[in-house]
Length: 208
Image (cartoon, rainbow, N blue to C red):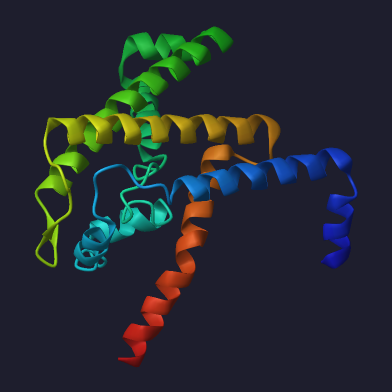
């Protein structure tokens, strides 16, 4: 096993790709800890304790804990994945998209463009929903949002949508210049980052 690892790192091109991928994943993890403006982090942590065993907790695991911190990457790469799935279905049922699929490289670029547009739409929709949810919640009797209103909603939508688009771009950079599929690597990094906490919670429940 050690010999195989040494062989991998002895190839300059492959070594550069590995380090490039690791550097981008570090950026992803740093972004997951940058909070959006206007959210009380302590109150949010208290409120999220009640949501750990719900669908929100599962979503939070896939984005590496970014959701519970209301961070720049709270939406993760999920809007892009959802848009990709929708476009895949559309190419099977809508004649226009089915024709694009048969046009080769030109059609592929067009479908990619539509996928990105769908990502923006879904990210705006989801981030606005999160902004409304944050303004209506409290933790330990303290409002999660210090200054609720349209300004907070606007800042949240812009911040989270930009974060998702940045993640999408980082994923494409990994696919082109790094190792493996970029989107899959970003999801994998988020799950791995949340494993220690998940294992700790599981052991705590078992001991209780």
